[in-house]
Amino acid sequence: MKTLIIIPSRLSATRLPGKPLLKINGLSMISHVFKKAEEANIGGVVVATQDQEIMDDVKKNGGQAILTEKEHQTGTDRIYEALQKLDHKNIDLIMNLQGDEPLMNIEDIINLNDQMIKNQSQLGTLASKINDKVLYENENIVKVNTKECLDDLNFPEAISFKRKISKQDKNTYHHLGIYCYKKETLKDFVSYNQSSNEIKNRLEQLRALDNNIRINVALAKSSPIGVDTEEDFLAIKKIMEYKS
Image 1 (cartoon, rainbow, N blue to C red):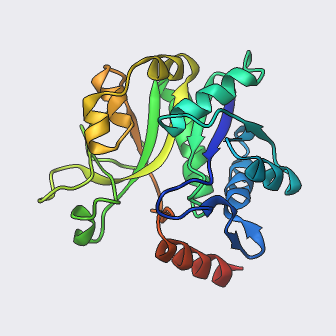
Image 2: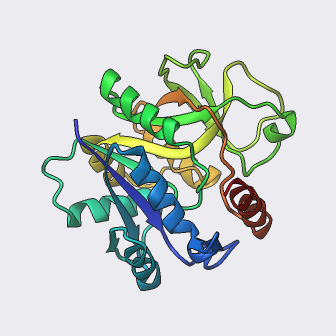
C-alpha cells in the first residue's frame, strides 16, 4: 500500500499569527515538520497551504507544496483539496500531519502507517500515556478514550474524544494531532457536514465518529508539544536548539 503525507498549514492562526514561518535553528517550523515527514520514509510528502509565503519557504528548503483555497473549515478539508490536485491514482493511504508539531517522533509516524496497513483500518491516529494529572483539566490537550488498554502492539478503537475530563476514566490517553485515512474514508469524511458535536467541542475527529467511521488508536512513544501559543513556541525552540 502506498502512503502520501499531506501537511496542512496556514499563516492566519488566531493565537499565534505567522506560526509556520517562525524559525528554529534558522529553519521555519513548517520546513522542520516537512523534513521530519521525509525522514519517516513512508511515502511522498506535500504541504497544503493557502499562503504563497509558506509555499515559497517550503520550496526554498527543498520541499514540495501546493496552493489551496483559503476557505476551509478544517485541515482535513484542505488536505482533501490538495489530494484532488495531485496525481493520486496509486495512493491508498493519506496521512494528515500537523504543521505545528516539529517534535513528532519519526518512529511513531512509521508505526501508525504500519498499523493502518496491517489492520486495513479506515482511519487511524496516535495517543500517548498521560503522566501528569494536570493535563486532564487542560482543554488544549485533547483526550481519547479507547475500548482497550493501549500497548505497543494493539490498535483498538476510539470511543470518544474530549478536551476536558474531571476524573480519569479507564483507558484515557493524550491524543496527538495526526491522522491516517484510507483514501475512500477521507472522501467520505469531507462529504459529511460538520456535526454539532464537532463544532461544539472544536474537534473534527468527532465528525468521523458521528458518521460511524471507526478510528483506531496506536500508542505513541512520546507526546510532542504542539505550538498554539508563544510560550509553546519558545519551549519547543529551546528543546530543539538544545538538541542540536
